[in-house]
Image: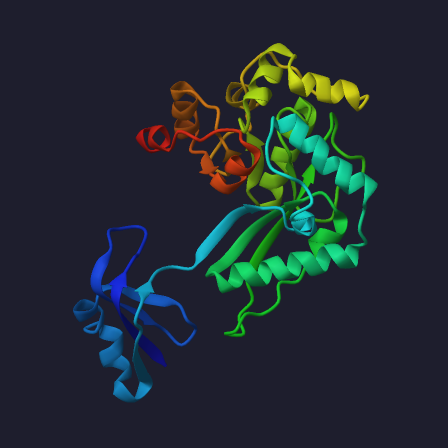
Length: 301
């Protein structure tokens, strides 16, 4: 049965808002047509099925596509309220690690918090999430069904850190954390694995000024962070983050760069030439205090 839905406004995202909009759905909920109600109501499929095979309803609101959260860390949902705001970035990471390491929680607690967050996202109109985590139990999260009975779609990527590829790869599809926390061999290996597995290669990139300083000069708060934790930095390329990843050959149309707050106009032009997808996280940027991305520059590039 086809369903014709009418609303005062249709916001298709790919085009301007439409007053008195309509959407036509088939019996599987797939959109057959969207636009001015008068045009959608004249769709050939309605004549083909006839009135008995179609339903009509009006909503007092806005029709728009379901939302996609293209970057989330559901395994960290249990930390809400336990790690305060404010940077700089390495200091905030240390506070997060302190809570995780000194006050670990069992997988059941992590799963319950993540499932609550998934339910909240579903209620807010989110239909799909790209979830990043490095805890094996996070890969088994099962999104609960929403009020309509439909489940939120979730793609989980196992996030890797360090200098080298793991001797035994995780069962879930993999990705890399960031250029300051992953060595070049791990970055290129994870990129190839993501291509082989047919999933996006998602990576935190140019999130903070401290990241840029560390990758270009090997100094600053991130250098102190590695020293305090007794770690050897996996990479110090002497380049800014975006130029470094481009040199490694991991920037292309299947790469998803997350944050991209500290990028020059040349950086943004390079990302555009490579066909890279950029995901912005304004809430996270405000919370940690890393700055604002150049959205106008991204659109112009």
